[in-house]
Image (tube, rainbow, N blue to C red; front, side, top):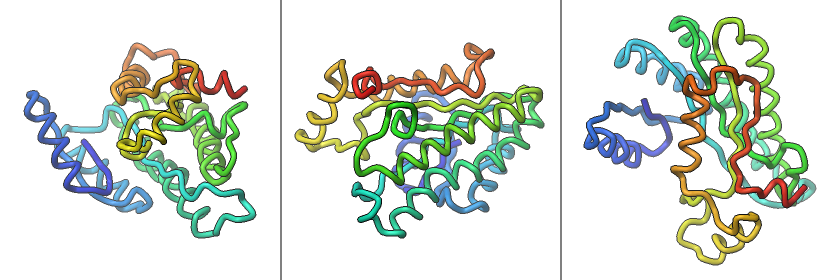
Length: 220
């Protein structure tokens, strides 16, 4: 079950999964909309018989300026997409997971907003990601007894369109921040997410898991 804003990209990814003999469906929409969050869960239930896990990966950085220069519109947009959407996802996903006897929710967070992760011009982003870390810990405490595990995955720079793909100067700058002197391939982050979603992480909940090529160590 795939969900995001852009229907064309979702359709292409769904086709790729199906061509590899997998099963996939998608629903395009806005993660800030509670109705959309519920529709995703309902569609997963209709097509797959229930919800067995969830990776909540939507996020934006917003305008990178100091807070005194930041517009309220930027602040509201970042908090809405990154943190409010995480709340809506949890609100709709947890009852569905409860019906299945539990499983795992993973939120994509960031070392920005975590210990020693502060970076200039990223006040809204850092606040939203710190909020996700706190939300994950609170949810983990509330729902562990139900067999529902909640974790936060904190990637480093990853080669995606949102990460400056196609701009060598941006990619080289971001790569240089990492002790590994490179950015992550998206598959490396996907493998970490799959670990958190799987039974291999069955004794993990409430944990922030850093998969950042050492950038948070360098900036500490």
